[in-house]
Image (tube, rainbow, N blue to C red; front, side, top):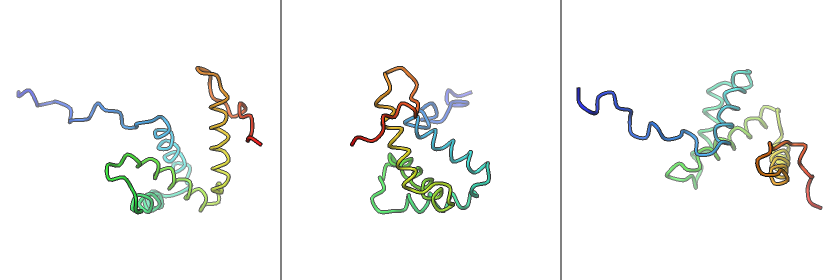
Amino acid sequence: MSRHEGALPAGFDEPVFAEPWQAEAFALTVALHDKGLFSWSEWAEALSAEVKKPGVASDGHDYYEHWLTALEKLLSRKGVARRGEVDELAAAWERAAHATPHGKPILLENDPGPAT
């Protein structure tokens, strides 16, 4: 047996997701599909439209940003969540994250509300 037989492919041990939010977006997409919110062909069409837009990074580092945009647009098109609602909730989570002490769980109730 050569030393390469049975070896894992190059990059196999590298993380699939660069950031935790990417894994969460992936899991959310699968869960919404499993609930019957959209078909895989609808999802493929939505994602394909985003990754084919001008300005997409050739190295793919922005792939999950396009994934998230596709999911948000699909949710809006299906009447599940308006784009503004998604943006408002994302802003609330961001404020809650900044208001939460290091090492504590981030809870939406920690959102101090928008600055006035």
